[in-house]
Image (cartoon, rainbow, N blue to C red; front, side):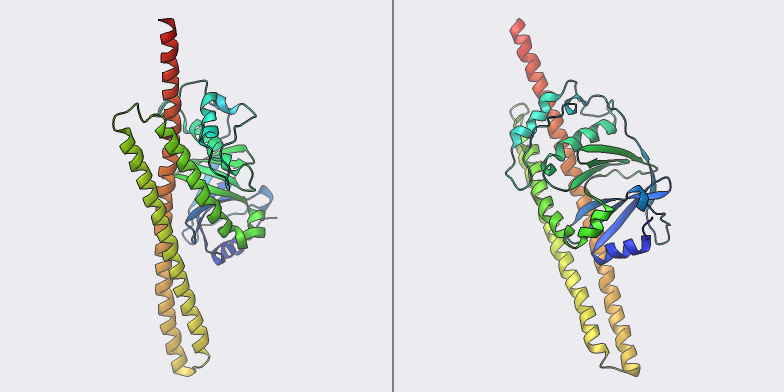
Length: 336
């Protein structure tokens, strides 16, 4: 029983959710990447196999085929334990020390450049870390790193590669099953806004904490840490400004519609036709403005999330490597 694509798209548009890209398995839509216009967050909608449908590029839809890329990865020894340490959970104060416990479970070196380490390993390792704050919530998450898409379903990761995908992006996305989306769509946007603000704060704090642990090892390191904090705050401010601008634009658009409905029934004939044309021009202009604002919001969120995920990855991997260096020197001292 497939879903009617046009009805689904209309439902999303009604709740100001913009479909960005469609990912297909066996020529049927299995995943929809969306953008919450209101709060500037990304959403991944997973379509169960029995509800999947075909998507035709009739209105400029960006459609990609993807392949299941699940594999037994190497260099992920720290994830083999069934007892994952509790990092700070959303709605609680961050506990950076428990997050760092993950570093103790590495059994092999990590390559910072990534030249000798496939993205598939890195994205699985990162999603196991960043999903920890969600362990007590009903939400799942996904990460996208270029052509790689990793979705976490209750702790079980599913990895996919997207064919002919050449965008160099890194995104964090809320993951929701299509049936749950339809059932909870009225409150989903507000819930995501509350959760995302806490999540960004947690990930930023643990990344800065990782950097702080090695601040004495590199000259002028503290200045770099402060620069990272400043840039993060600038991004957050920009996101807040986007949300305000979008809300103001939406209110103006709704005001045009309301004014039209109040006045149109009072006019007849040529006056009515003239009024309809005038209001249509106003609405078209405002609608175009809103689309441009949403486009800029997507670019801003893309840039913010890419930098945040790179920061988390680099800070974590570097503190692990430097910890190993310190331990190796300690062992060396013991045998002198």
